[in-house]
Image 1 (cartoon, protein in one colour):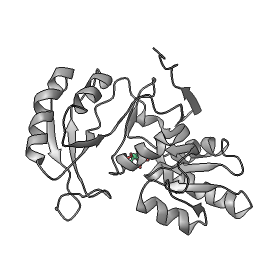
Image 2 (cartoon, rainbow, N blue to C red):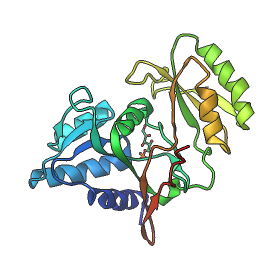
Image 3 (tube, rainbow, N blue to C red):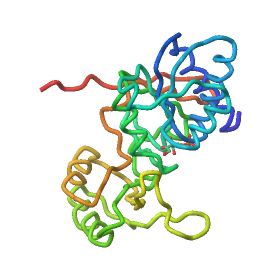
Image 4 (cartoon, rainbow, N blue to C red):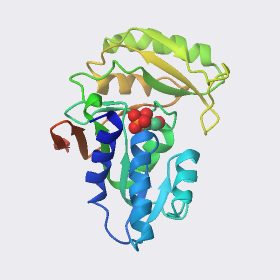
Length: 237
Ligand code: 5RP
């Protein structure tokens, strides 16, 4: 089975969670796109759901397949967000933002009662960080932000090249929120919670691709089928 087939299998598993009248957050990326196609087919045969997209690409696809769309301004509480991931571990700590939509993806996930990740098994890793961590930053003071990430991430054991993301035309990649992205090739992020705490101290960081304590469930499709992983109980204290 190729990666595309596996993505489809994961998307099919998540589709089973969708019930009539649900309000859904729609993720961004090739795996989320499979889910949107499946959902569109269901909508055509009568399933009524209302969706908030996490990017303009997703909005265009969702519109094209005939899904009913809304905004977080009109519907600030969603039932379920379904999204892909660039990497995840068994505690459902994710790296997202490969497609540059991390901020909207995190806001939509936060607005949702439940976040479900769909991915092929290549995304499941022992320790996240081989995928360069996307960090969305303001244009203003980007060199300062870069230097601060470089200096402070080391306190969480994270060292590596920090690169300004560029679009295919060579110009800096600009997010839909008008910001830039620094991709941090740390290799391994042994203490993601500590790194996230450190990032919260750096004023030029708008958000980062670490999704910690956000996803509830992941459907991981591999050669032997789809495995469901559930997030560990959150410590209330
Ligand atoms: C976009 C994302 C995507 O979910 C992530 O990049 C995974 O994409 P794909 O399903 O194409 O591998 O975070 O910002």
